[in-house]
Length: 94
Ligand SMILES: CC(C)(COP(=O)(O)OP(=O)(O)OC[C@H]1O[C@@H](n2cnc3c(N)ncnc32)[C@H](O)[C@@H]1OP(=O)(O)O)[C@@H](O)C(=O)NCCC(=O)NCCS
Image (cartoon, rainbow, N blue to C red):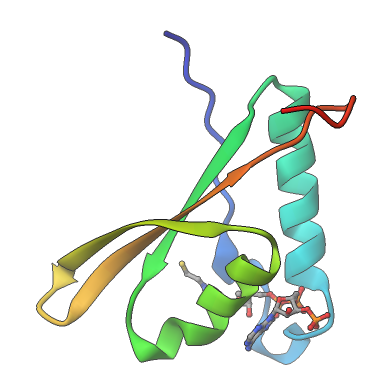
């Protein structure tokens, strides 16, 4: 089995530039590269802490669904949330 991996640095958007579509555009370009490389799904992870609720909302808004929750993964009270999105091919099919 062959795996292809792309890493999206979610915290690439500087605090003063957030909320203006930069993250959405970065994610769109990353997904396009993954698709072009033959990838058909994307996994994204983040912390479950309240501080990351905006990030969780950003992923949901981009069409990501929660796939797994690993309780106390990082430390007690700080779990890992894993989101997944199935990408459509150029023909609109999965
Ligand atoms: C998460 C992050 C990358 C999003 O980038 P951004 O440029 O601020 O997001 P965008 O402006 O492209 O937002 C796209 C959509 O996501 C959703 N969204 C964005 N910020 C949101 C928030 N605070 N709460 C809920 N939804 C949000 C909205 O639906 C938004 O679309 P809209 O503005 O048309 O409503 C950025 O906020 C960030 O760097 N956060 C801090 C670092 C971080 O949490 N890193 C994750 C480590 S895993």
